[in-house]
Image 1 (cartoon, one colour):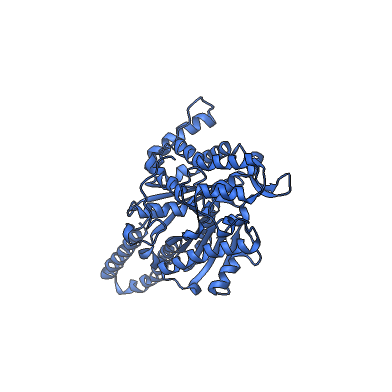
Image 2: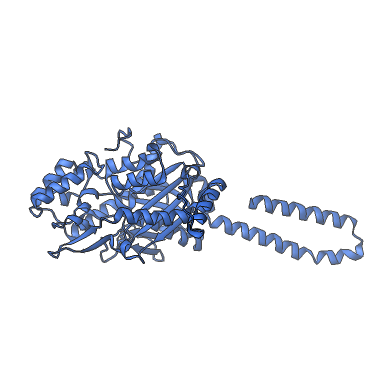
Length: 461
């Protein structure tokens, strides 16, 4: 649109000048020359405005998801055996964890660090650091290979890991490993839970919009070693059953020249934060149990809190992404119920009119069931989330990237398709990132965590 306005203005201006100079008397020629600086100023203003709009666009050049090797593979049976061998869990809690795993939606093969799988698990700082380095270095190496970006060209680094925050920081580990430049903007995000990956994208986007001609790398993971709970508080056992080893690396750019080689352009990011409400604040909480063993408790209020946060989030997101017809339906019911206090059934917008693909965080089978019902989605829509949970488990903040990788591996992504990444996290938070595909993504040529997988859609196991 801006191109057409600029071209139209230049054509009109040139026609005007040609017409006026053709019929001007010599005595009036000098006064017309005084208008030239004004016209040039207008052209400059339009041109600068055009450049600013171009620079504000943020692209996802490519991304990578780390796939652990088979030495880290674990079956459901092996997980239960490991829990028994630890010698810290009561027989009742071992049975409880086995039941949770059976109903979790996880498949027969997922991944955990080797230090946890030993008869005597090594839950220590050194092993936690080794796990995160293994995940991040693997993802970054693949990302650099895919994008051909040199480490010295990276100007922004955003890392998110909720529970593992060592000194030197995770950013420092990456800078040291890849010898990144001394003026790089580094930011570590901690305690953000499973929503941290989408939140990090939002943060990187904002930095790029104020630092033109820059590259940003966003790294997302959760540390299974530091998150493992070795106690007997039932509310803290869920973490051991669902969370698995994994991570992602994404390269964002605001270089206008990168548009042609980028996979996606970011359209919207949105954050809804409900920590001001005590029930939301306490529903996912890291604390000591009765034996002073650190763990993360999951409140029974979690699903109710998630549903409430989702309602607030959708209220803000809907006007940004829905077509006019859906906006009007949503507005009428919202005003009727909230403003006029009428007894009207809440209208659930048809988000399939706004998005072709959905990447909903793999919080667990119950979470996905609730999200599918709340958003009125079909099995096909939540297949990427269910398959990611089935094959890789809950990889926390990086899960939405395994889901997008699944869509690519299945050959689903076509030019112009819109993708909704939706994640929930402690606090309680709900964060969204909306992307548009700039080109068709050819599945056969991808280096992808699903490449050698039999990705026939699983049932709601």
